[in-house]
Image (tube, rainbow, N blue to C red; front, side, top):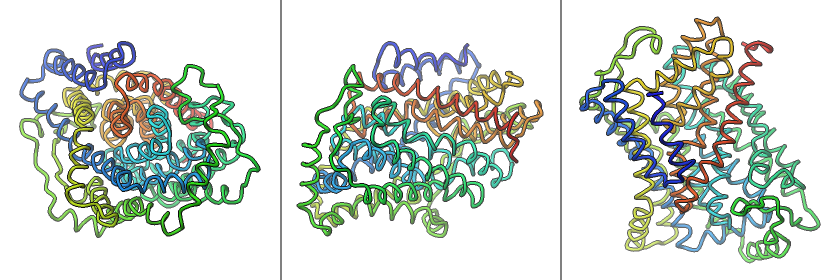
Length: 543
């Protein structure tokens, strides 16, 4: 109960008292400091250092990515190019449900595969708002969509970290994660539409939604099992994006169905009412807007995002990354590095808990986004003074969200180093034969605390292996379940919610409402991952 006090603080302030995310973050940090110092007898200097270490990680690389992702979007808006982008998407499909699948699911998964760390939520959410989605709907859709690809995000870093932490085979872990993720990825596109617009909102688009999920899940399964984790998301995302575009080019409905708009249906009490704004009139307006622009103008407008894709891919190439890392440096965090000992069963033997801060400014994903933003500003002829004003405006916009992110990371890091997270993990490990079900929930808890599947794997990966050995379970499957469960915790992480709020300008009351909305879906999907882990453990034995 002492270890869970910070979590209860966040849940009560966000879900019940409906406080702003930054208030909940700071209050949660205060409670965590009390827990660490009074409950775990952590020296105050070490506890303060651990909190500052987490806050620093929140500033770089996390907030560094968010800042430039939003700056890139603002460049397209300030130059009027986003209206052309909106028209081109509208011509491809005026249906907002399919726009959401194209941008939030397929394009967002591509960004997750290349950059991760909040980039897909920041970019996709701003694009949806520009297309007419409300801030709340855009945030909710992107948080739900950012589940299928997270386990293989950032060129497979979560799985690579899991292999390094546990000492298990990277190929076996990649395959096991893919086998659990694929069935969930299959339903995510349809699930997004149903969760945001009701079951009836699938009317007329169930086939492309199912096809999108099937293509993504199929490629995710094949690549993760037979190639490796590095390109799983990128290839799966490109395949589903291509499948959607081909389908929409061949599918010519005689008349746009009014259907249900998921652009803003979440903002109304009756989520199953018909949105007249999504009828043929708006469809015609969007198509006319696009038809006035030549192919050259459309390609010119999309150029900033082409720069983004190019930079993300280049930054992921090993030789280029090695060159960029030449001026990177790491240093031991003062009063924390190797001060804490990780003890069995969290670790196999007593080992020092390292605290190294990596200042990889050039090779960071946010820097790739920064370069894309500068290239876009140059090619779109944004003057230096105008660009400077834009960056100042983005800075003002992000002050409170960055404060929230830093506070939440401080909570997560302090809970890790004081032992509170390990206490919670061991309580899950005591579940015996039901441990395969609770194994993903352990990863879910880790991502809720840290906002990162990579961090959750580093934190709980070895505990999963040790527990599996004690219970006679497959250690590869349990470690993989940790990673998949963490995926489902991404949508309720305060860090991720703060990113969505910053990208869309979400109001303070809506931030707590967004947490309550995503919480039930997060619990359901994490439980689904637990059920799949049970099936693979006791029914279908796949090695």
